[in-house]
Amino acid sequence: MSVYAMNYLREMTNLGHDMVMISQYREDEVGTRIYGGGPPSLLDKVEIHGLRSHGEEIANSGKPADFESDMDQMVKLAVTLHKRKPFDLIHAQYCYPNGMAALKISSRLGIPNVVSIQGGDGHWVGLCCSTHKSAMLAVLNHANLLIIGSSSFADEVCKNHNLDKERLLIIPGAINSDDFRPNRSAQLGELSNPAKLLYHGRVDRRKGIFDLLEALQLVKETCPIKLVVSGIGPDLEESIDLANKLKLSHLVEFTGKARYSDVPEIYRKSEIFLSPTWSEGFSNTILEAMSSGIPIIAANSVGVVDCIRHLENGLLHEPHDIEDLADKISLLLKNHVLRKKLASAAISEVNAKYSWKTVSLLLTKSIEKVLPRKPDDGWEKIYNPLTHLENADLSCKFRYEPHLL
Image (cartoon, rainbow, N blue to C red):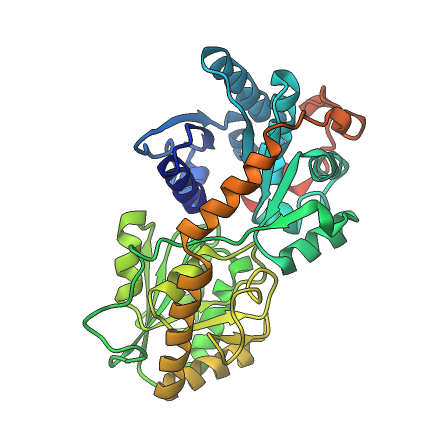
């Protein structure tokens, strides 16, 4: 279960909504190494059903992932649960495969749907093969409501799929500032010796982890530093190998998967947050760092520029530019006044714009407007509801590396 989904469910139940979640998970060795594995965690007042994604797991054997069978499994369970206690609405996180499953469920049950476009499915799914292209077009053009986290991400989705931006409702990510708060025992912008740098999130080259390690090699003589890399992902082992190759192992600590309850303390123990990501839908980790009072250096990329403004509430470097990233790290290490200014501005902004109390009300009002609508079954003219693995476009790279979705 994603952090966003967990907080969304909690806030919606606090507002009095009855929430049921169907979430898929992987239990194979590869999936466990990349995602953590295991069924979704339990939440108070939320009925949670975990479905193991066997169709995705078969990619480990060199066969194409069967996303279609995993979708059918979600649809079948939703229909069964609806018979026991009817749903009013289906809300999917991610366009594919969940959004496609939501359209199918809506058609079967005659209830409206909402799809939140997040992460990779907005950046590259649909540009990979004809099957996923038709699925994305079906969801984007026929979901009752499309929610997306940022304007720059919306622009990218519209460009990729020739979509009218009016179809997208922009509602940003959110943070629980009661959990993520500054370290009370330290002053804003204060540095230890060595300075404590943090990368937290998916350890993936597309999140810029290789770029960061390369930049760190250029910075290490500038100021005493220590980088904590918190998280797991598809490129964790390669990141460790690169740190060793660059002779940075004494400066970089890879701490692995972190329980969400432990994450606020990870931020509070850090002094500069680094997010050299190539693209985002909307970055929860950046919001967490903002709320924690840590000055931020992030890439000037989609999904980041909507909440970080250079020299106002953070520093931006050009994506893939190792020297620029190193220069920004050096600048922040040397400038206490700037660190304090950026951290203070970020705290003020996150409290004003990105609290879950504010964002959950926006979500509720938007979803309530959809409730009277009927599902739009026009999607069946774009995506064949009888699509199965045997008649899908198997040239898609995600069939063989589904963790890249």
